[in-house]
Image (cartoon, rainbow, N blue to C red; front, side, top):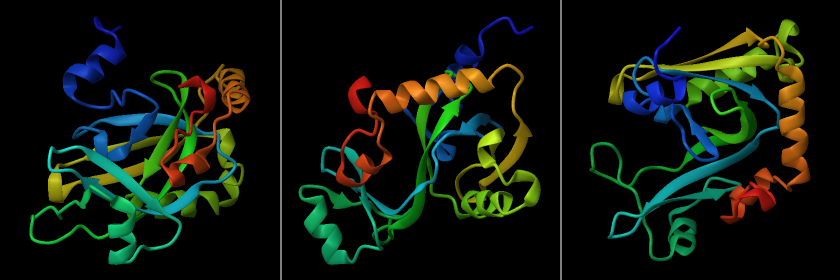
Length: 196
């Protein structure tokens, strides 16, 4: 048995602490992973572009279709589109999906945003496999290895942890009752309804 809690370990390793109501594979540290259960009936699909102010404040801007440069300019207001990794040009909008998941670390319903094509393709492939037709009956482990340009992401299905079906169901029912709405991400609102 570990001496310190899993939460403390994640915080000090810079890994999957993923505080707040949002999860992202890009926030995982090299060698870290997170275990989740999908609860959304379907993902929210969108294009995302990050904006920054001169003071360094960052904000995601989401669009139902791929935005043009004029769409970005009119939507971002005081924000400017973020530069690419090399700092040579404006970062292109990325296709992404968001969905509600049960986060095993905190045992809460959170928003998982996936912008990595490798993970999106693998989720699609898994969901079309006969053994995983009910994607909501499985857990998934998302992992990251490498850093910067040599980063690799993986998602693997795993049997549901024993004793968690009722906990996941209760957490999702509570979220629905609180008004959780993933569509709020498209208008800059909170997807967490009355609870946050």
